[in-house]
Image (cartoon, rainbow, N blue to C red; front, side, top):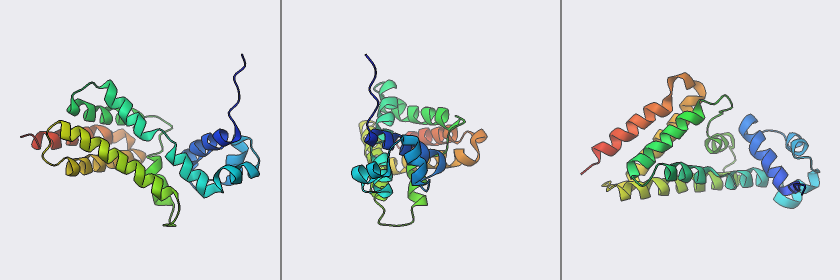
Length: 187
């Protein structure tokens, strides 16, 4: 059996995910269309334009699922599950193709407050907050919402810092800070 080629919608999403990560959200429509191998008409039929495509590329990216997968591999202990996230961030941030967090990059680059991508970025960050708050709650943290905020600051900081100073291994520093934060919150 011959594998079927993805349809124009999926090819557009794949090209947008790739190019907006590598070159930023201001990458040209022509570059996306060329990589996807589709006509301009497909972009408008499926997404209404580039703004809709960028928003959908962020929404459909498996970001939160990757965090859950990493945590799942770490077992049942909440602390180990959270620390595993930072171990994974260390591996990711040391890759030559690492360009930072696609969500934060998009949010910062898109200055139009009405751009639909901002909604997707907030939804993603909120989902991570819930994920961390649930883990901290299971661990008996006295204020899981605040603790989740702290963890998100550490994640965002590690991802941003690794763009400019990867040799400093900011994910390892963030891991250490996360561990100290969880230890201080222990009853």
